[in-house]
Each structure stands twice: as structure tokens, then as C-alpha cells.
Image (tube, rainbow, N blue to C red; front, side, top):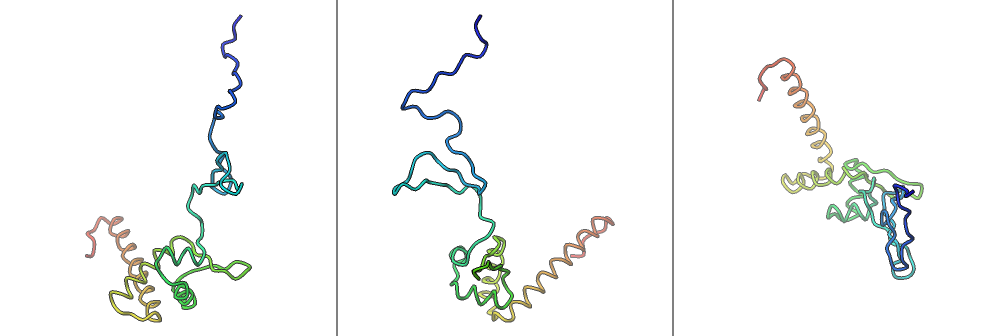
Length: 144
């Protein structure tokens, strides 16, 4: 009697292993078979990092790291610190930095006043969102 599922033959010596080429690790990267130059295993990032260090953040925003430190000190950017005292930024802060640069370039606002302007713009956005929500519930026309 023949078995409905034939046995698998072992691959020949030069064959690639069947199945996925690399196994995903908990850190969101894939380890590929083989070694890079120097005998170090290669890994490839599959997901965006959950936080950015100071140098990466500065490069991503086109800003000098010292200016980024000043903006953190002024409270314009939110950053956490690790046990070694290094700054770490959540990815949405890149958008905040772009907003700061636009306001600074467009209105020549100094960095100290930018905090007030950003707070006011956020408050306006909240009020507009609340107004849109109320007009949809009551069926009335928007106020603008």
C-alpha cells in the first residue's frame, strides 16, 4: 500500500533549505543564513524603531543635535532619557519638529514663543474637532 503523503527526500548538499529563508526575531528583524564580512551574522530591520536616539532624530529632521537639546530643554519636544542620560524620541516628534521649523521659518518666531504658539494651535485644533463632532450629532451646518 502506498502512503498518501510521500516521504520527503533529504535535500542534496547544495540545495537551499525549504521553508522561510530567515526566522523573525522578537526585535522585529530577520536573520539570514550566512555570515557577513568579519563573521558577523546579518540582520535586517523589518519594523520602524519605537524610539529614535538624538543623532538619528537630528539626521531625520535635518537639525543640529545641540538645537534639538535646546528645544527639549524649552519643552517644545518630548523626549525620554535612559539610565545613561541619553535622549530618546518617539517617532511622532519628527512631525512636531517639522511644525516647529515651519513656524520658525514662516513667521520668524523665536524659540521661546514657539511653545505658546504650538499650544494655541493645538487648542484651536481641539476646539475645531469638538465643533465638527457637535455639528454632526445635531445635524447642523458647520460654523465655518
